[in-house]
Image 1 (tube, helix red, strand yellow):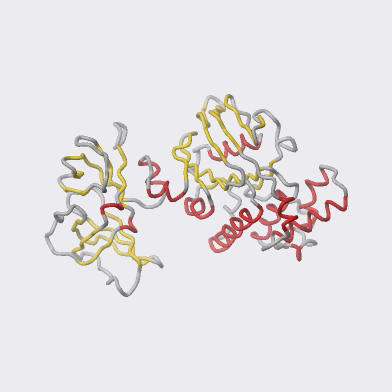
Image 2 (tube, one colour; image 1 turned 30 degrees about the vertical axis):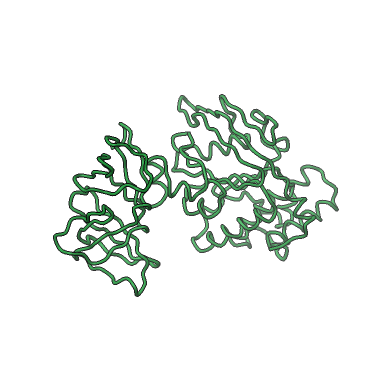
Length: 376
């Protein structure tokens, strides 16, 4: 997918976005509770979270469909907090249902924002041709939406949002209605497109895999606030809360008390990661991601190793999930089984339910999360 440098420059008009203490209540219910967010020009940022976390409300506040009760929104340094949605905000929006006009062709749908702005006919034709080539739909310009696949309709909606050269592109779960294979293809295509034209994108999803794949940074939302904000790998490997650890992928959380350089988990000693600053008496949870664990057949009756990076148990469940074997291992002293994802290959013998198992890990793959009084 390529386009001339002149066309790419014209499509891209990226801007920085800044949200400061954005709050909003509807009917006595607070839906945004002081959202702070900085998005750099040309950055792809995803608002991620469960239903009701405030991610779509935040996007709608940026777009102008929701007016904050307090706080400030600036785009390229210009205050747009109370501006209505439309031309003054200079933002393109792609919704989940695409909102295409069924009686118009692909080209007419894409041209619509330019006609509203009363651009000259020749310029409209040039821009539409450029952006349709960009999204690889130039051969379908004369088709109606009903004759397009879901992925093609999604690209028409994207082209329509890009054609008037918005400073920011907002996307509200635009791939939610697509099947898994098509979604994966379009995720990569959208990411390549965004990098090619240098657009500023703010994207909403509840799918953590989608967020990790596409984003420069991810804003994890909870109860109308941003729980954690940073690169996807940072959020996954170093979550700051139990909520973040649980929401971002599968997790093993071993809760205990720091004692003399170890984490005491129900009488089991877990080695702390190198360089930890956790002090004796602190309550901490050790996060062990399932893919960082290795499991093999173990010795019957063994409980743990001396180095604190090995436990013994019994296989409760074993399932083949395509790329990996998924094991649940019951370990005496732990309230829940340990979850292990092990690459399915000839080097790893498959374990059967009921077999004794040894689980090992690198102590530096552990991430500690401080526990507060509210944490169970």
